[in-house]
Image 1 (cartoon, rainbow, N blue to C red):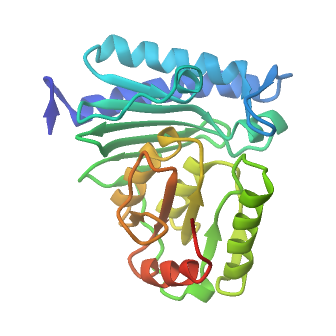
Image 2 (image 1 turned 60 degrees about the vertical axis):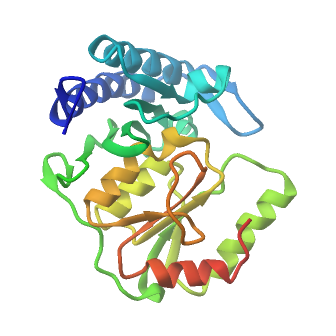
Length: 273
């Protein structure tokens, strides 16, 4: 595949370079005192988030000035640009900001490219653990250059499930989230929350976690890269209701082909809104 004279391998190499440059900024800031701002009651942003987004977009725009760009920090200020069929870079410069602030090592740079609204390139880099996840649509998924695959687990009760509580703390939202988790706890082996949507997806892609779902995450920057990484690792990405995944919908589930229907059935027993 080529777009505007550049191949997907060319897109990937630039995205990896940008992710590693931003990762170095995150690594240097990880053990330092952070300047923290609140976007909401528990949703945080740091100077590192802003610096990394500027660094990534500067590099991508120099290479691909004709492309479109959506980023977490710029969208927080100006609103999310509508996703079109044009090649669009969707970036979370620091997924897991709360983890970053607390010195918990599940933090990453997430860089995705959609073409015709389809996630096509995915790069997720955790600079603290030095884990680089990469995928190009149709070409497989890799961790530090080694191919990865989703788990082969086919029993829900033996599955490790990841999810997140998100940043909304109103009673209705908390009740919906905890009711779902309560319902699922007896149906799976255990539940994990890493604090990073992108890292959760990568854990599914490499088979560390069997299922991940989240409803109400921040935006497409949380999932654009991870979705293609899961798919290229042999997994399935879908709406928690069982329908098709929409990168702009703030809803995602990811697992292997064996568990999808079992999980959707279990989740639908707790009505999802």
